[in-house]
Image 1 (cartoon, rainbow, N blue to C red):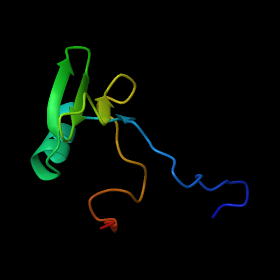
Image 2 (cartoon, helix red, strand yellow; image 1 turned 135 degrees about the vertical axis):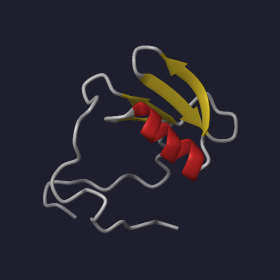
Image 3 (cartoon, one colour; image 1 turned 90 degrees about the vertical axis):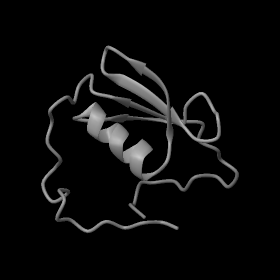
Image 4 (spheres, rainbow, N blue to C red; image 1 turned 45 degrees about the vertical axis):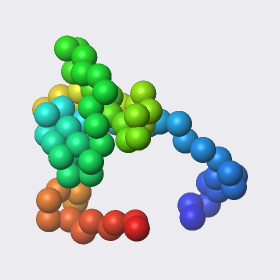
Length: 85
């Protein structure tokens, strides 16, 4: 754990998160097509909201400041991916 970090308190719940993505269709393909989330709303401004189990949204995806961006060095398709079961 980094020196200046504080662990999350036991029992903490996260309602939803918002992610900046470079390509909204590609992100939806991954989160909905691979992970099984459902699209609940898509905005013409470059945002979409997805959920599991009928919740209004667990993840918000947007391209507002990231459309067409590139992943940071070392995080591309050839990098290692760790899955948490």
